[in-house]
Image (tube, rainbow, N blue to C red; front, side, top):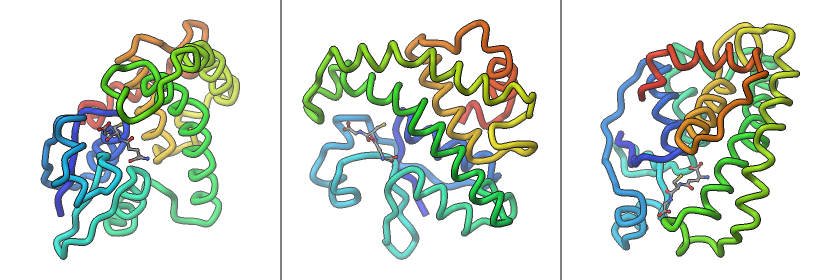
Length: 201
Ligand SMILES: N[C@@H](CCC(=O)N[C@@H](CS)C(=O)NCC(=O)O)C(=O)O
């Protein structure tokens, strides 16, 4: 197996996941933009996006969350997406909520604001700004949800929902749009996440 990787939020999600699963997968490092938009790489992923996971038989899985799902099934020793029906549903629910509600606000802001993405999206700077402004309220929503003092986003154990949260946290740091200072529950969670070895992945 090999993982086509670069420095980005969607690849960070997979790198954290791999680290938490305690597995190791060789990487092919690509420069975002100059390395991902080439005809050669489009043979791996026709969308010209990373990450992509190439299996030993040449089959390819793209889409970071699909790659994580594949790896969770392929390497079941440390399950991060749940085992029981409830845990699977609950973790899927929380990871989707974090992805669509928080991560995507950062992601859309970046895509509509950074020159790097000017050739892949019709950028609307005003939309980038509305996304940026929406972010604090989203962390406040999560803070209210976590006011029951549960240690992890989906409950008592670390899961893929926390991987989604860590990916959003990485973008929060990178683009300096932090968790609001009065979100004590989420800030406590974030401190714990920053101390996990996978944070450096
Ligand atoms: N839904 C995809 C999104 C992947 C994606 O947007 N990747 C961006 C980096 S975050 C990319 O590869 N962009 C390449 C480019 O802009 O050339 C996933 O989750 O893997």
